Image 1 (cartoon, helix red, strand yellow):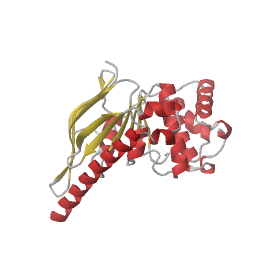
Image 2: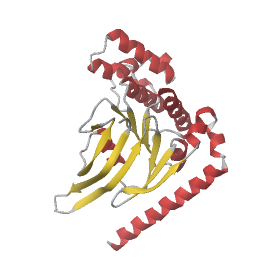
Image 3: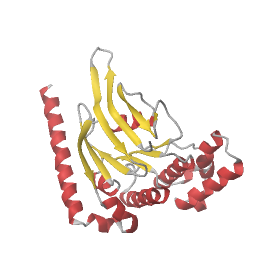
Image 4: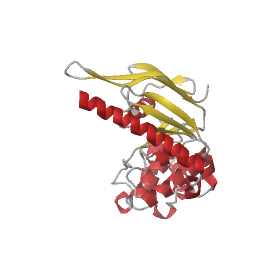
Length: 267
């Protein structure tokens, strides 16, 4: 069976003092191949924990992750991760960073070179192949990180606040690039963000999570990602439905944050 399935996943972290933190509780959802999903929620709702479980970095306390009919038991090239910071190899050139995964898998030198050059052209870095990483801006480094992830040809791309450290203009350009890559590659993408606007723009499905324990609070199916593939993102954001949904979700998250603060004050 193709696609990603998160089945009754719970995650509990035991603490040295004998207490514990229930980070996730009974989270279930499924994504078909090629779906683009954004995940929102207040701090402490388990967004990154869930992404790390899907990546195979963490084993859930209960439940399982299934991908294309088999169980996820650890990290694998079928799932690529793009972090908030590029996590690039500073001592390698741009092209060498993109070639790294295929080189580790033993791909022929000419094949991986051609593939790296193709991906760098797609991400707008064709003129920077031989540059050192430290010579690039933050936005360009995130483009390298995307190209490096795509070079492994993963079935699923996991993105943990990948645009959070960028300035507003660069972030907008990168949002457009994410939509372009999603449409051109047909990859399944899960993107975590703290920005409601970004979640609306980059999620044909949008999940709002509630905290303590982390769980799915609300799901939306939205037209804005598809619209943004061929339209200016600022025009998409002027859609009255975009504004209405943004305000609804902001109010939802604000109420959760106030509830969290109330719990903290009463603890």
